Image (cartoon, rainbow, N blue to C red; front, side, top):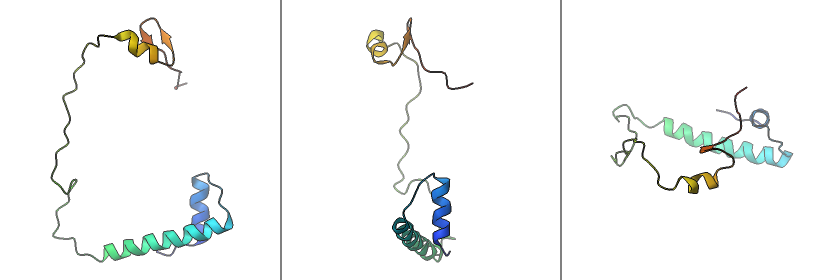
Length: 95
């Protein structure tokens, strides 16, 4: 895939970044290099390789989610940004 400075400018605009001319040249070169390596990886025959989520075979050690009583409620509420009675008060995020 050919990457141009116009592509870098478009990506920067989407990310709301302002780039200097030398940064555009630098990032264009870096992206070309990255996509070059991706093309090399695409040449590898992976048809017989099963999909994996963890190459080490490790399991995700999740514990059961159980509510429990915390002895020192005041310690938690003291660190809260806002408090109303025995509850943590947060700013409204939904209109």
